[in-house]
Image 1 (cartoon, rainbow, N blue to C red):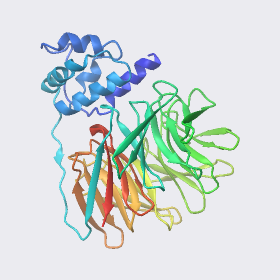
Image 2: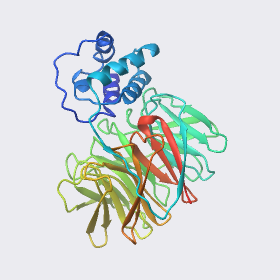
Image 3: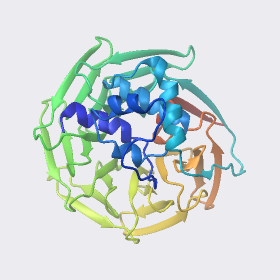
Image 4: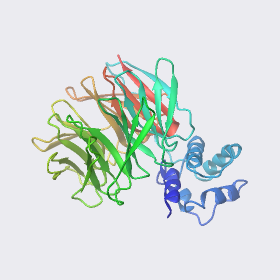
Length: 407
């Protein structure tokens, strides 16, 4: 498959859920021929047959496809979305529910300028502004919360697929180009991008990135099964393979001692990296079916992870090797995802319920509290704590970025 075909294929599958629809050809309908011509040229129709979405989600997916090159007239999108939703509807999902508790929060949400932008990762700047990666818009977005103004910085390389997002001490914005195999830096003042290409063609999809205390940038490369290190002063990149084949390195954090930890979404493992030798040590979680997707770390270097496959919040102590698990309020199919630590509690999202929920867990009391997302969430893939202890979230499926103020 060509690179452009791969990107369009990815766009169509980003929100795909497992469904039981089986067919050999598209169902009859006024939009059949348009779907056939617009979609089949870039990916197989089997992706549609395996899908199930609401009309709103189908229309968002169509916008995502248009953003990366699909030829669909704007005035045809509502009709195509209705056709697809009527023939390939969303499977029933558990209802997202609020759980009462002692903490009060407020939500402020912004709809991003480009429909189908698919905001992936958020970034809370020290100046109080918010950044996000518009993965399918090929742009970085900058939000000024006081005015609501949103400024877009479009990347130099088309279809780069910006994904992970972090800032350095100088205020430069760094991101992973998930579709184009590089790490990018935006000098905000100059409006200039710099690209650091992966030294291996295999490392085509850099994923999550984070700075350590020495200013070294660490990152995961999911489908290539690698982790990497970039020295911003020299531009040198070093890559190492994860010991477990197909382990899909995903979320990443840095400990207080400067040790990178990452979770293996394709296995039931967490792992650490020796900052000097790049040797990787893996920690096997108790349950074979665990699939940790994102991780967060507290000041005492306890790692918290979201077990996306089993619906659990996990706690792991690297010093003792002990893991504890807590069933998420939404149950075994709640798909816990984005996670962060704020004001002494663990916060994460449940992506498998409708609407998505924001969940708070008190580690001392072992108690949960939750809220439903006003805009729906549309899968909150990542979140970040602000300098004053609040949260920023990217609601990818509904083209929204949120600020959560914790009272």
